Length: 227
Figure 1 (cartoon, rainbow, N blue to C red):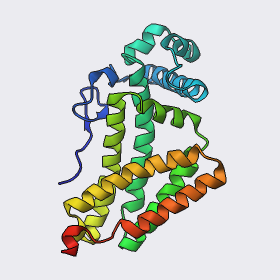
Figure 2 (cartoon, rainbow, N blue to C red; figure 1 turned 45 degrees about the vertical axis):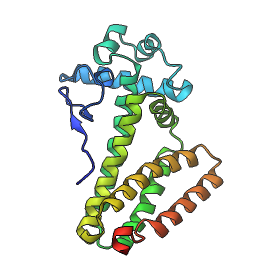
Figure 3 (cartoon, helix red, strand yellow; figure 1 turned 90 degrees about the vertical axis):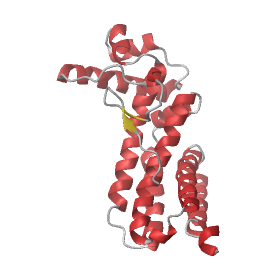
């Protein structure tokens, strides 16, 4: 079975079916003016989070920074966690799109391993100077619903990779391999964030070690195939 998909909620938000409504977008803007206002709020939130972190952001401060009435903020977001989710979705969708593009035409398991290393390098380069991304990630660690959303994102990334492996070596896709892929997907994000928070040369060394570990163990025989 594939990993559980992220469903769309009634407002069109990409999220798990059981994720609390408290972090869902209250309404999806349709008119251009409303779309622009929502973007202003999210861009202002990203700036504040980059400077102060999620915990220090206040809704009133956000309204001032976005130059919108406070009512406009609450029109879209029931609380601060919903803003973090919207920003997290931006990053998650970019990562999933990149993964899907890179693994669409993979031709061998060796090439799949090379692509994992390339994804890690891209991920690190994309976000190492993005303070807002780090702030949003740290925000997901302090909220149960957001943490669950982060874990579901790892499952989506893992399933993209599993689909590629399934085409190349369907006999490898047992439950143990699926669990291993899911684990590695989540740990890749953690390793990259650790590297981003480290001094540049040491961060790159961390990722080199992690890429070596993945090459050595991702396609190692599972207990079922070894038997």
